[in-house]
Length: 108
Image (tube, rainbow, N blue to C red):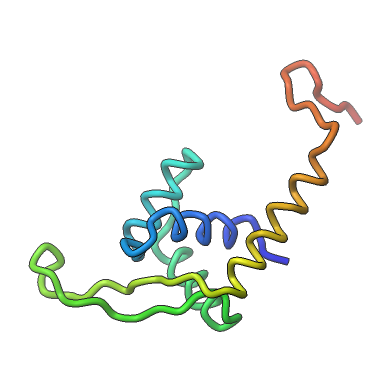
């Protein structure tokens, strides 16, 4: 099963579509979660997801905005879509009947 960070990365890349590359994915994740995402964690996770066959990456064309450096473009594979769907479905099932309203804290 995917981890939370892997799922968030796949979701961000899916939202971005053809514009999915490292910096854009990082920004999308930070906006969605309200938490900072280190570039090291992002690229380590991209490598891991690619090794698992959940994404494919390719180097895009160099751009003047990046000092002539190419972007690492991300494409979600069919297997990646299936894994993300299974993760989402599992979280949804586990959350049925759960209320996260204030005052519902569980005490030991």
